[in-house]
Length: 343
Figure: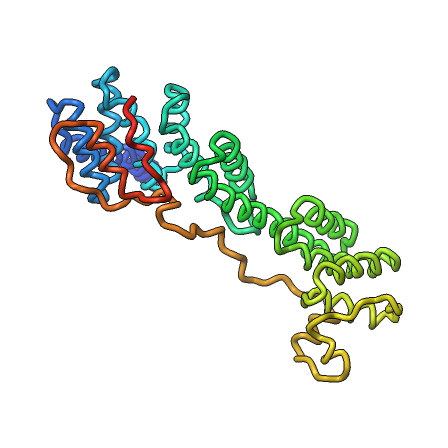
């Protein structure tokens, strides 16, 4: 008896999910005039975006494509639907819609924006370094495609900045794994991770720490010459870094300093006898523990760079090209005037 009740309850719960989804879909469809033409649907979609009703906007742009496939509004509706999905956080749907737009309109003046928005969909999904970095790789590849295809655009300029953040994030992942291996005393595994940071991510801010960690693991592996070489590279390139101070003190503790060993720049006074803090002394003599606070994913420095919808001007009756141009003009220097073109 109880089993049948549980089965019935589970069945009801299972059926309730699509029913609720259907109700939500019906509520949106009721807000769309059934006899509306393409221009009305497009303007209503813009109004929905302006007021934050992104699901309604995407439904109206989709209806234009279904009911008026040869309308002059259809191409823009395809792109705007992808944008509406982006604002909802429906990144997979946004990517799918943007790729459809690019497939149908590969030479569109708005292709640069579509490629850029597609890259942002991946970029927004970047997780903390402790998790899988597939989204980071996909974001970097998509951003690199923007730079390769449209190198002189404002999208490419912002994409280059975000590529650097992606590379820094991937380097952070290698450091995270390397520190774990080092704590587990898997020094060869840690060595490989730190080497990868130095070889593949030379422009990131993780390189000084990676070099210092190499000094640690090579000492643990008994590779004295390699430890001195890594410390020398660190001291030559980052003489004022705290990481070189740590490496220098490790060599000093192992009686491995030579007359050629460079002294740390900022801490010569400390090396001459001035006290350093207990925390710095511990860091200089021990493996620095991994922070329990994982760094957040790279943040957008400019809300407009994230594709946020600007404040929209009042639409003007007639003149579709002028209305579209006015609609996107407030995006300003970053987005430029990509919407001044008509398919």
